[in-house]
Image 1 (cartoon, helix red, strand yellow):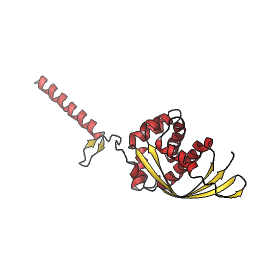
Image 2 (tube, rainbow, N blue to C red; image 1 turned 180 degrees about the horizontal axis):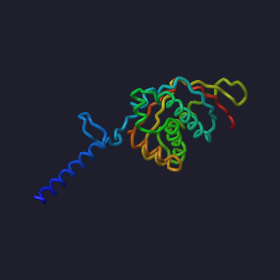
Image 3 (tube, rainbow, N blue to C red; image 1 turned 120 degrees about the vertical axis):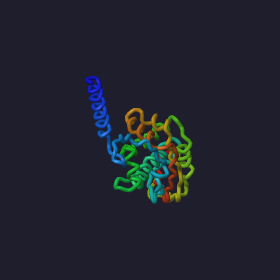
Image 4 (tube, rainbow, N blue to C red; image 1 turned 180 degrees about the vertical axis):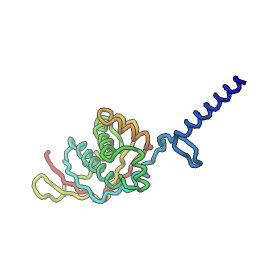
Length: 208
């Protein structure tokens, strides 16, 4: 009899302990306990960046071969700022919930993308190389100038792509921004952001 009572008591304690562990979780839809793991959902660039037409952008470029990388970098950096201003949301929308779940702030997004330009200098990437080549091909020697060595030009509907590539992002940000870059690649699918600048206002400087 004593053995039976001892066994019954042990079973009762085990049942209480098990129910206590379950109750520690967040309640599920049926009132029971569960554990909510971190979100593993990954988002597409098209869902995050769906407003990619920049109405107007002003850049200062130089019409010399040695400055074409700087020309492309200037356009890329300013475009990143504009695209994030137009797309990064914080206030309750479905897109804001996506950005919140990713866990990378607007400035950190910007730094992660801007750092790509420094990586591309020694590791050419086709979309950025296109901007480099376009920057001098767009130059028109008949532009009107307001003063010597300075000319102005307007280009309509200039299009380019911004590549969201895991390897490039990690390499470009490994020195000082690796934590944010790692978060981005864990939550956002690879792809490209297609950008259109409706009116590109170029001020050309001639230092040749």
